[in-house]
Length: 342
Image 1 (cartoon, rainbow, N blue to C red):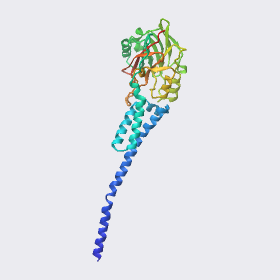
Image 2: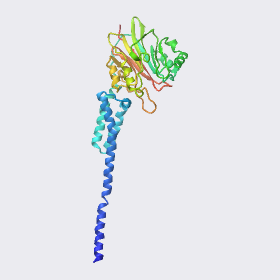
Image 3: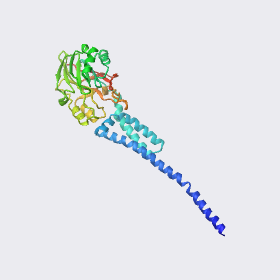
Image 4: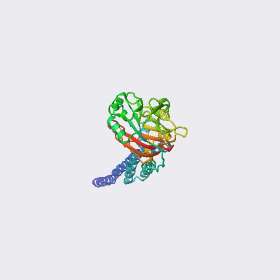
């Protein structure tokens, strides 16, 4: 009897063990599913926040300002996350990611399609802007672009005294003899160099020395006003970035045609930059469907378009190019602006 009872007890234990074994893998699978879902949601949330900031027009702090410059790439990232979530059957996460993709696409894809330009019969002004990275940009390449594109006015930022000497040796001032130059060590120097006579102006408030401006006499009674633009990089001082950008002038019928050219440290995805456009300007690249072309990278992030030529909305844009600039972390930007007939 004892033997039978013992056998029966063992049999019951055996059954219990057999019934418990399948439960453990299922529990692991459930935990794994939750982990994957959590990781996907954690990846999507920052892009949701970025998209919301872009939609409401809030640039935020130093880190979000930097992130907003990458908005076009965020659209690619959310598409990848959406497809991954679909493959893993995380339907709600996939839906959110793909809605973000469509939202970002609606914001950025129009920049790849230019609008029809007004037919104007006035003079053509060819503008080149180059950030020299503390004077390290290749002066021969700058002079080569001036010759190739018959540049009328050149905006130089991060221009040092040594850079001016290099440009002189390369023959710049024989081509463009008129100048308003404010050289400084490393990043604070800027200047304008022109084929036409220049008269210094003060259009950029407290940052006038760093963002010099001048009136160009194009002849036949036609004058325009140009500003070399370079507000502080927001990664160093967000408040100075805002203040110096707000120093830039409005364009309106009370003044001559105005052109802003240089390193704005901002893209169309920053509300600060879009506010500048409401002051009476158009972005030359955007007008011709070239506003997705990057102009700056530090080697760790993909190129972002923060160098611009903004032209008075009374003008038309005949050409725009992003030009490689050896020695600098910025490419140069070139625009041909057509003035209204006088």
